Image (cartoon, one colour):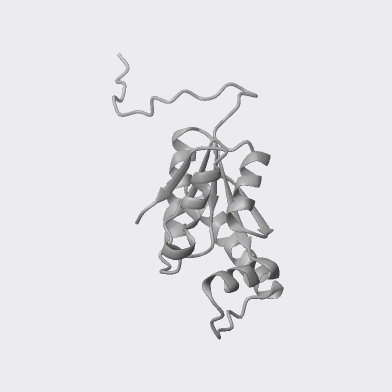
Length: 164
């Protein structure tokens, strides 16, 4: 008699060539984006799917627009193309290590522009079943609107906002 484990994973393996779930997650290196990545990787594993981690660096135009929206504060964010590329390379390595350690098939994408627009665009490109982001912890987002709220208003797929 074979002793079957009642706690064994009941999810069937997808057939060869069968569609699998695609979970798109926004990552920027913040604590809440890592929480979102963790949740997205868990969801991808549960659904026998894959994750697409997206880092969106702001273009100069969107940085100017945000500055104008929030007000002309005299600050230098120190964000330029070289910094964005370095940050993307670091995130690519860290996200890749995390996914490999958790047995998740993951693709990393670095793009430029408005974060919500780019996440929605890439969700369409990758036929994402879900879009996952971390909750914004920035005070200014209560005035200008958080990423989660902007995505929910224009969603192409269900949006999950992970709250730590």
